[in-house]
Image (cartoon, rainbow over all chains, first blue to last red):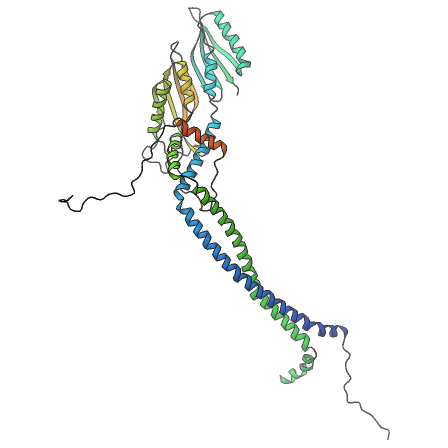
Length: 182
Length: 245
């Protein structure tokens, strides 16, 4: 009878390359992850502890400073009211061109011994309405010439004369409207 | 059940390193999400709050230094003069005082004064909503008689900050006499109620720039001196016994 051999050893299965690499590197990766986590967690705990202390100190300093500033509330109130009021006065003064006070002398200078301003209305936008009496034709002509010259010198624009009346005594009463440009 | 487990045992043994490593990684990720991430957020918050607190502290210190440099009594005295220019209420008395002073200074005779009366006794919610530049207008009209020079002075002095600020909107003149002029002025006085609050404690104080400083000095010089009434710190009590001094 021929000898028969039976191999009882289990044939070793060949391990794949991927499996070999996975087996080699997975513990390293796991250990690295764990170490990184522990280090980062420790750092975060130390950072929070240190900065919480600083934060609390800073907070109490701020509270003390706020208290000191609050004690000066009266001074702050008066100071703010002062600055606010000055700002308002400045804005109002800027808008107030005092046009009326500037125009009035120019109109007044139209008067002479033979020309009289009866009534005048001036507004701060420069609109003027005059009622003038000239006692002679010559003085009326002189008035017209003066108004023409004031077109350049005093910025009198859109000068219109209307409602010219000749009175029995030879005087002329007329209404003049004009605009004074800034 | 045990037979089924026995079936998977070789597989577990084969992949034990990989499985345990995976478990460790998953557990680490879980801990990171549960512990590390909240710590990270808290650290971020602390950092942001610290920066905010530092800037707040700086602002407070600067404000405190500015306030310490101010003299409250002087500010109060000067504020009375400012308040004469634009008071906090309609203050008709001040308006009349200003017009009286202008009469004396310029030589004009004020014949008639008209102003919007409105609510005299209260300055609550009934304040008229019409406002210019955040300040309330009080329409005023004045009738005056004077010569040419006094009229010009009067018109100029209305807004020269010696008294209440009155701006002129329109004038009507009647020259009935060679020397005398009758003038009717339509203008506005102003008033500005005090604000109800002064803002946050760490709000920055506005600076007085050069323009405002010049205006301030002009008003202080033009206004008459005022005496601040000192409030007594203690009110002395009388004797408990009527018969002994």
